[in-house]
Length: 391
Image 1 (cartoon, rainbow, N blue to C red):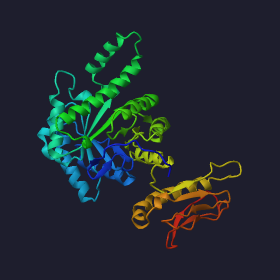
Image 2 (cartoon, rainbow, N blue to C red):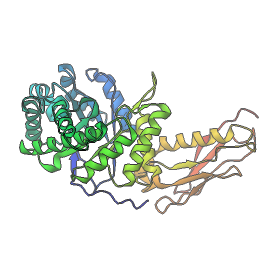
Image 3 (cartoon, rainbow, N blue to C red):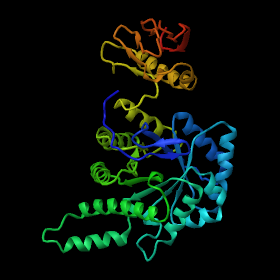
Image 4 (cartoon, rainbow, N blue to C red):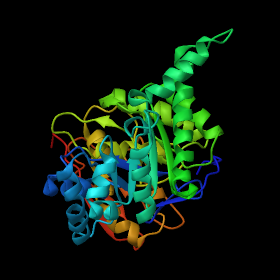
């Protein structure tokens, strides 16, 4: 593992999951179902958890959603899905948390956007109500500033002050500073209303790569709260993956970030769990965490005239992911095993001290190779079928 020096933070606990510099960087995801649709939300949360999401956020935007939360948590518990559920609140969070105490009780964390909680607009009563509910039920809170809903009173004040300077800063720089100030001021206000420092997580999301890097560097330098990383509106497909990797990779390399989410826009009917796999791959590629054995395969060239190698690598990686829930309980450190397809057509598993595997192998010849064998610690062979078009 790479020796990245994590930024020192306090440790928050979210439904039993530790968040902070003394814990691994946590992978988070969010549902896109109507939370009032209990079966649909339960199904998606369970799928995200099976994919490796360690925290799952759901929208709590109306009475029906708030009423559904306890039933969702209950059903997940019946299914053995032990993932903390985070409630995402906006303009009416103070009302919902007050009117639905079972919702407030069963959520593992609340996400509050200061820009949507009336802070700076003539009073802090809504924000105060939400914090007091969190204190009552001993729930951590993520104070999540977003550039699209930044406190306009604060921003206007800072823009006015900037305009009076002999050498005014650019508007972008003032906006980034306003996001940092909003997050820090809101954290201080939350503590004033009774929330402990170790119950606070901060985020300051923007949609630009360089903006995210700049705002988080500034935020990290001025507090010791755990930070949640993620581009808002990262986008679809390759654009979203590349932008998220570029932004978060820089910050993670600098030790900044304690939870991450890759906010991909899925294609219609697409797999929501893809954002979990991308987040895991960012961390694993950087050597920060390991989640599943990795298959390393060459991209192919004129010497590889069939699709056999692509099929073999893809199917073995899929097989490994399917087996991980079972293997993680049986073989400590199995997620750190590495596999490499060599030119001769053999996929070799590098031996790991906790998982003394032999190798993954298959005969190599167009139309001949039909399988690969994965040997576990007891030398038992697990077959993974690989079928070519010819033969």
